[in-house]
Image (tube, rainbow, N blue to C red; front, top):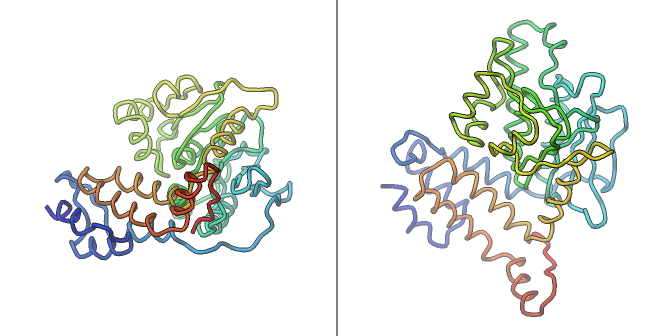
Length: 332
């Protein structure tokens, strides 16, 4: 099998070299005869995200103007490296509008190429709401072609969030329905307050999830439970979501209404001390490996591991261990 042969060929090679090698295999990597494929184009996109250069210049610790529908905050001091995307459409329950999708796209485009960014938290700035899904009032003013275009753009932006090279955490402190839950599903980790409400409710409107929900929910909780949720348009609270593996942590809500955000911030703080290059290639290896058979996945892991061997960070990690001090990683 071509993928099995790739294990030997990939000994000590780079991910970029692996892209070229797997591209020569044909259309893509076949996953154990199941028909799943990981094309070279997917590899190139992921590698481009994980190894992109420095981002746009901007002031750390800055906060967007209060009237903006998306606030992008670069945290400082002990949280430096954490970026918070705060949705802020209180009058529309944070529903996904054309403008909000445009703002998300612009923010994600800047973040994916910024090596100073270490973890991204997606949260709501509106108490009791994460995201209520698509803006149905706006939707009623669209014709068929406009609806199709909007759904395509929403799907593309949520895919970009899923492909961000650094860890992403969704902090669900309120309602996350339809596209709101699809946005959370695109994040690596989801935490929620016990009072939060989550569901893919599109079948109530005689449509289906169109921004990745039919694909990411089964991967998160299994096919049978995902079908049950989508077929019934069922809405779960935080405890129910935790019991089926939809979220990683559930918290009792606090007086400020930001318990999930506080937990997300604590998790992000655990990620910050780790090697930046290692974090990026670890995410790449996990994401790509889950889409293929085990043998191919091991080849992907080997290629990704090779990217860490020649880094200055790896040598710094060894020196710090020898000197019994915390490492000072620079992402190099």
